[in-house]
Image (tube, rainbow, N blue to C red; front, side, top):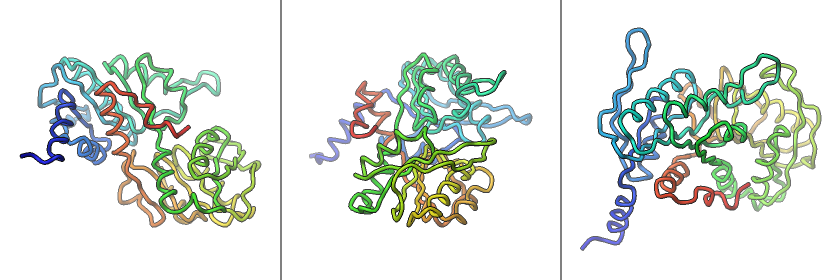
Length: 332
């Protein structure tokens, strides 16, 4: 007689029948982990390049009538990963997939979401238009830089949050019981995210008011809230060059904080960000694995947490037509 666990696995596999997962070259390790969480194997797909650099996609199994999920964060090299995604979408549309869901743990070009100067493009909208025109039926994204990007699509967008994963990490490490913990938003735009984490840790939050005199440059204007003598947890959606986080952390320490820890969902880590973060006053940097962090970017203070369980749970709910928002009832 089959064991209870074997019966549950059999029922789960039946419920996921008709689903297929595929992945490009952006973050294959994450895709494999998501597939393992779902008890599936990644679909057979080959992505190569011709001699002139053009991308060639070959789907090596039938997708006709299937609920197809493509896992492809559009991180560096952003343009290559985007083009690979567009070609995969076209391939599955022509292969008669019933529904094609793009799972983008990281949405490239998200910071170009509005016009700041005359004659500037809104590239985040352009990317959304192309994804739809290539045949996507649905999009799943994790911590979009600007939530209004959901409105750039005319198809459903499921917006996932990495904050609960970060929050659980800090709860497990005793931060909720520590009366000297305070959460810090590195800018005014991140107040909602900081408040949600503060609620999870049962503490107050602080806001850093800053200005950017030029791209990737930041100046701290004021810090609003009580943080003197506190352990500060700075939370942001991404860390790119590390300049904003490092400057903010130094300002906190200079004005009386006892410790500063940085956490984020997306570890972009451009240029010498890893070295800058390691040599800063930060005691720890916590991130999710939405973007692959190569060995050359790993540093001693860095801790990477898995996002695959969350992404797999969302994919399962979408396939079964269940609520995705229920995953975040105690967040926001």
